[in-house]
Length: 282
Image (cartoon, rainbow, N blue to C red; front, side):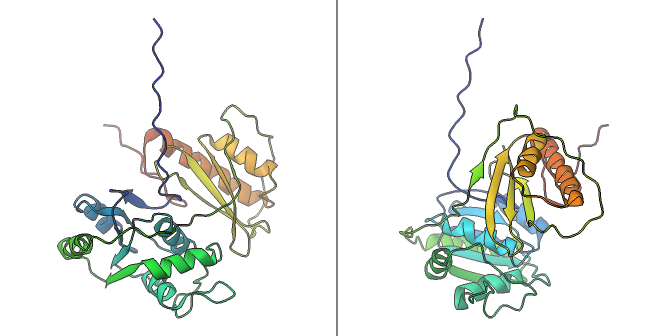
């Protein structure tokens, strides 16, 4: 007897970029960012009220800030960003506040930020305008008390603000190679040097069912995305597209993509440059 195929539900349209976060109520008006506090993010995600859309953390004042802003301006329901937890030396919370208050200069640097490299070149002018106009930021930087944060989150939810009439998300070429596709084999050896073609951010997709590789130019512009489930096919695709010039960089990307594939199939958390926390057999 033939078993009927199970129809896969459609993939929701938000979030639009991967990151370290827990999804809650996508129609909620409040986003919580615990900055560098990992455990606080996990604790809050278990306790937040309805009306909180997402609870996440972020470490870097450039690519990390871009991802936070991208997911915020892509969701018209989001009207409040609550910052809490530990502010690291990268001053990410301060950069998010400065971007809203002052914007950025012609070189993409966030005005008024005290971070070492607050460069946000992959955000369009429209994205920054929407972020600055629609958002209320609640500044609880340094607050580690779960109850204190939840109290402010409930207050923000209760305001009941209307959805914003505009939204934005990156419009960059995206390829989704088939898992059965063949990729050319490349020799990969050599000492590491900065790749003249740029760098990649790698993560599991927002719904943890794909691997995403985002390519940024040396100037910091997001210009290409590769989405799939096979590390071999993804890496073959980026090589065939000429996105990697340095052999040691290619080796590194292969290792990270393989880690991401393992995490995908074993339903583990994956974060670039971190060891996988594999289950212990007893």
